Length: 285
Length: 159
Image 1 (cartoon, rainbow over the protein chains, first blue to last red):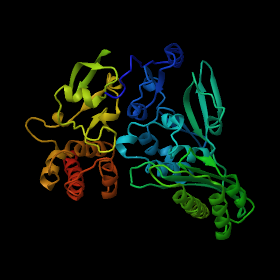
Image 2 (cartoon, rainbow over the protein chains, first blue to last red; image 1 turned 135 degrees about the vertical axis):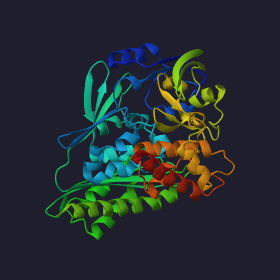
Image 3 (cartoon, each protein chain N blue to C red; image 1 turned 120 degrees about the vertical axis):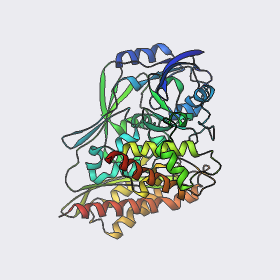
Image 4 (cartoon, chains in turn red, green; image 1 turned 90 degrees about the vertical axis):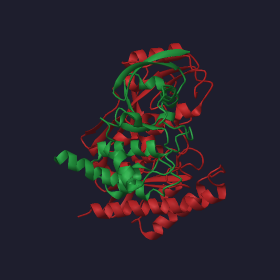
């Protein structure tokens, strides 16, 4: 038995009840999305679960070029959705295909992945690079930028992530994702996501996130700054990669040493940016 | 703490007694469905895969309570009127079974794939089976079997 201290389980069918159950449940009560991570945690601290599976939060919708994703959408359903395929040259399904195996993706949800904040999450760096926004419910709806979810002061207790929106992107934007793993279905030893925007051949915006360092993905402002104003030449990409190698702080864990990760950082940043450039060129008639 | 859950297993509606923190894997095996193998118990090997509302999932990662009201299919539910399911037959014909421990999970991943994608490429079959470890066959014949099952299924649909 995985959750040996579990004493209560509920699957509410409306958000107000879900919030009430969470609050009444007290310290040991957790929200559950797909549950894969919670079940495997085997945590003795979990005494109650509020299953979000009955709230109708599994949907993917195209809204004027944006993609709205219900928090309970499984990774598989997002991966297979036409809206995700049509968004930025399919960069989201390309990332999702690298997450675990289909057996996991059929259970794991987008919202669970974002909220659990596992440092090896592949969804988090890409969604942050894409500038996603979110909606929370804590009795009232609150919206914000996904980056707020990962700010140190982020306070999620007592609230439920209901929706994530990937914004409509202007012309001249491309995204990319790169991941290094020890085996095809393992979690990342390092990952990287990038978004670049160009106007008349000049980069006017760049977002680069490196994750599984082994800490949670974070932006690399020096690498971003090295790109803006350039023509994204090979030299500019190399400068961004060098900046990332200098500035991304890495650590040891069972998947890789800090030194190995530091060698991976510029490789990931370079490959991500080259891939984004290819996508931009492919999109230009 | 005990809880009764209503669940459809291999087409039969039943009410099953569970402990609250138990996984679907534990409950199914206690109900006698021994095709559901306890392998790694951490979602890595795929030996415990079942179909949950039509999708192949690792039953070791699914809390039994969440299966309330849902439909589970295991290998025990595949045979029909004394005939093997076409995925089973294809696995036998291709020689995709050796020790047999991974086979139930492989079958579920194959069936789950064909229900979403009736005409998969070889690469798509390999991707669908990425979560199923097999230490005997080398996978080649299992991939062949899923592709053969897709052709069999297409033939059945046409007819």
